[in-house]
Length: 210
Image 1 (tube, rainbow, N blue to C red):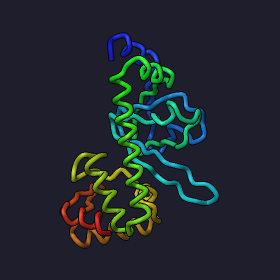
Image 2: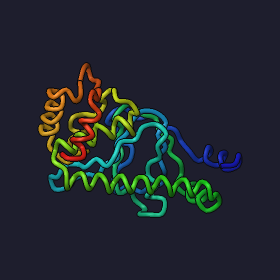
Image 3: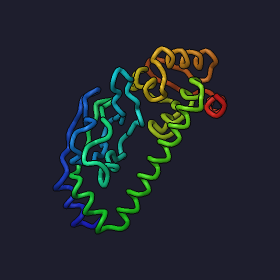
């Protein structure tokens, strides 16, 4: 983006800090901003109704943008966003983003690429939910967290067990049981709130065949 465009974005954004578990965006509320994660970790999820559990779609670390589907989609958010950790986000007016798409081809190309990546991930998540056993779903989730979210084989598990369960489509007790099995088998360790993948090959095998 040029200096004028950067200036426009800077003028239209507001930086807000959120405490852990605080709601950032609410499903069904008017979508007025696109969200850029500056610090922390947030989750995007679909709220359950009629007694059904929430379904977490993904987790977003610093550098990620949330809400691109609302730029030319529904005028309201089709999802909710909440802070998993204390987080800071920049909220950018959605009309400014629309204008940049129209006037900056490179910017538009980058957004299309990011939307495509998000769509493909959602397809894979749906496949895992419907075709894999519980151990395979947890294995896939841990690999995703290590590679794409925390970017380390050892990471502080700031997600709650309930978060992990809602991300993998199972009960909290089932998620805890699978994690304990992986620990007992020496595939992962869970010490003082830090999870470490000790055997990547085995975890990948469980992800593929579980």
